[in-house]
Amino acid sequence: MGNLSDDIQSKFKNDRLKALVNIKYTANWLNSKETEFFKPFCISPQQFNILRILRGANKKMKVQIVKERMVERAPNATRLMDKLCEKKFIERERSTNDRRVVYIKITTAGLQLLEEINESGSLSFLDKLTNEEAIQLNNLLDKIR
Image (cartoon, rainbow, N blue to C red; front, top):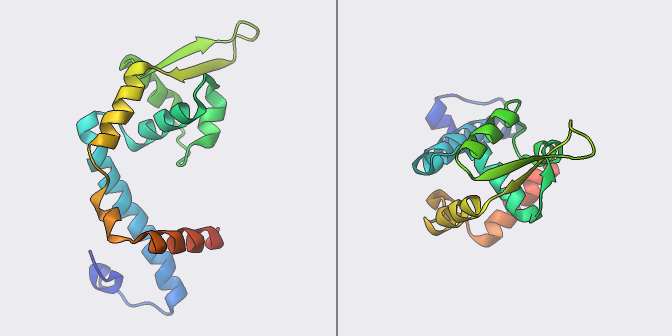
């Protein structure tokens, strides 16, 4: 992985088009790296995202709110949560006032898993960016959106 034009053997009409393709190409590359990173923990990046949201909330949350906060909207979020329940990383609780409302919360096992992931080291390719470059990249991506 280096120069986009070399990697995909293509030329571009202009730098803006190249930037768009580069963002998509890099997003796909990052997704595969992320999936590879989480494989030893037997969870997906989306499941990690759910656990991270619940840890940050520090209390039970409505399933719908968790779905809305996910970085990558997953149409199969309920199935992802089912698997996390099976692994005892989260617990479900139905509302006593409205049976249609379901709450979830992270368990001690889920918190321990997140700690284990944190201790395992970071995604090393991110170390290639300085803090200033990371800030600049975040600002540019925010500007695009």
